[in-house]
Structures are given as structure tokens and as C-alpha cells.
Image: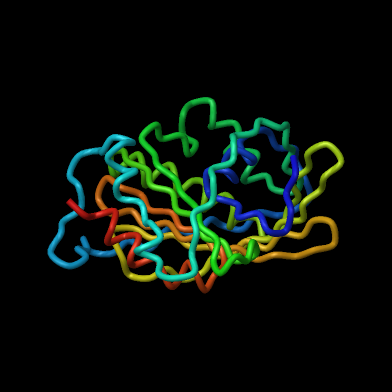
Length: 231
């Protein structure tokens, strides 16, 4: 597994890592925090979808360069990798790994993804993921992963000779959609340190996840939610 400091770790990518397998460590888990649940929120005059959408429909609701503005370019999607990854020092993630085989991980079949770099700077990345399922399934799936990750302030990801030191911190999410989750991920590998922000917004039967440089996530989150709600 190669994790350079410029890598934007998407929620699904981290889920895949954590669900691969965990070993028990010495880190003490804190009590998981629940997501903020707001009253039903509508962006503009467009209501969230009432039924799950197909992947094709979701792909039409992704942000594009015209939404982001000048200086952004779309990145080609990387092929999925299936390296063996061990998580050390996070019992909460170990427990989540055991439940993955029952389908409670982030494995929603209806999904669409894209990612961008800003101003030709590979360190300035933002990625978007859209998922669709029933509101209950979306809430349970993303909530379990965010709770498990924020329950472990520090832990390690190990694949072969690569060791990634991880840190997670729950952060406030804006009052968008029906449920919100947000966290800062700090990871160090090869002597270099990077910070990634991940914010997930459930609006009806659509889950919007933005990951990347914190300032870019904050700048484009409302636009991503608005586009996801578009009819």
C-alpha cells in the first residue's frame, strides 16, 4: 500500500482499510460521539430525493469544474487496490471490522465519485463521494464508521513495510441536510505529515462526503449538497 503525503483518504478508502482487519492494541477507546441531527433542511426550493437513486443518477449530481471555479482540474480515478492492511491500537475499529461481513460497513452499491486538484498543486485536493440508500441504512453505515474512527484519537495503519500514524478529531459540521458528521484526519508517513478534513452530510436518501484540504472542503460543501439535491 502506497500512501504518499498528497493522498486524499476518502471515507470509503478508509473504510476499506479499517475493515480489512484489525489487531488489538493499547489505545483506550473514548465513548463514540453521535452525529448532529438537524430538522429536515432544504437547500433553496429543492427537496431531497425520497427514494434511493441509481449510480447513474448520482453521477449527474457530482460537482464539476464549472461548479468549483477557475483553477480546478479533474483527477483520473485510481484503480481500486486490495492490499492487506492491519490497524493497530484501535479496538473500536476492530469491532467494526467484525461487523463488516454482515454488511454494516460503507458498502452501498449506489455510488458515484470524483476528485479534483486546485491550481496544479497535488497537495491541494478535494474529492467527492455520493451514496444513495434508505435514510436508515445511510445513517447507520456512515455513523458506525465515523464513531469508530473518532473513538481512537491515534492508531496505526500497517501494510507490508509501510506504517502510517493516524490521528482523528471530531469537528463541528455545518447545519446542512438531515444529519452531519465531520472529522480531521492527521496522518504521517515517511516523515511527512498531512491533514485531511472529511465531512459527510445525509440529505434524505443521499449521502454527500467531501474529503481533502480543510479549506477546500469548507468552501465547496454547500455547493455539493445543493448539487446532490438537484432534480
